Length: 80
Image (cartoon, rainbow, N blue to C red; front, side, top):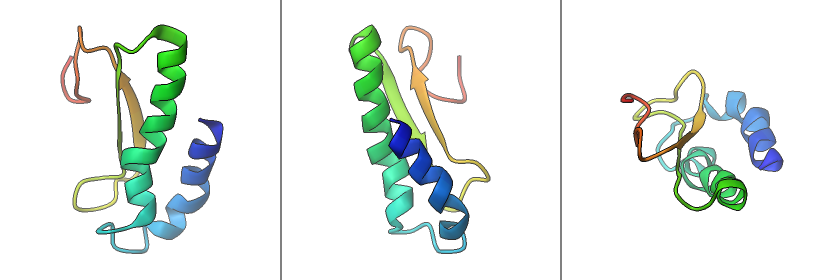
């Protein structure tokens, strides 16, 4: 998980100068990093949590994020 977060931190500024569409780092924030975080969360707490990452929608976010959600409370960053 550490390596995934370090990759995002190292590449984000450079990659945001490029289009988000079909961008390798954007795909990594959406899929690769959440998979790594989910593996750690599952190992510590079981498989009941949802992990989602976002580099932005249509445009780059100012800050990319990876969130861990407890489905009993919420499954999105905008509710719960």
